[in-house]
Length: 143
Image 1: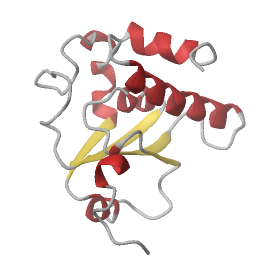
Image 2: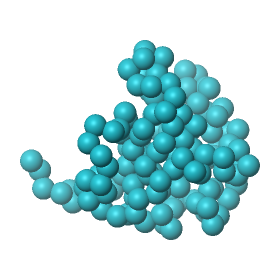
Image 3: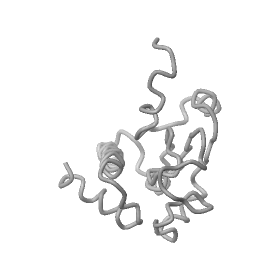
Image 4: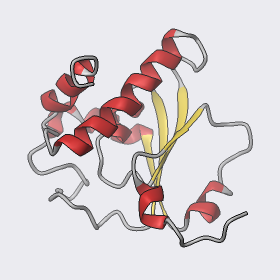
C-alpha cells in the first residue's frame, strides 16, 4: 500500500528516482522490510553487510550503503532500463545525495553463483533481490 510506504516513496523521490509505480513499489517494500528488521534488532543498525542480487543501477544500493556495505552483483552494469551517468546513477537522480555512498558499494559483475562464492561465509546480514529472479526464471534447473 502506497500510504504505508510513504516514507520510502519520499526517499526515492528526494533522491530523484521517481520512476514507474512498479519499480518504486518494489524498492519501497525492500526498504521498509530492512527498516522493520533493524527496528526489531534482527539485523544491525550500522555496519550492515548486504548483498543486492541483480541491483544494477537501482537505488536500493544507495539506501543500503547508508547503513553499511553493499555487494551489488549483476551480469551487466552498463545495461539499464533507465539512462545512467558514468557512475551508474540515474541521469535524473540527484547525484550529490548519492555519491557519498559510492565507497561503500562493491560492484561485482558476473554470474550470481560464482560471485556469491567469493563472499566470506557468515559475513552477510541480509540478501535481497527486487527483480533479477524474474529475468532468470527457467534458466537454472529445478532442485
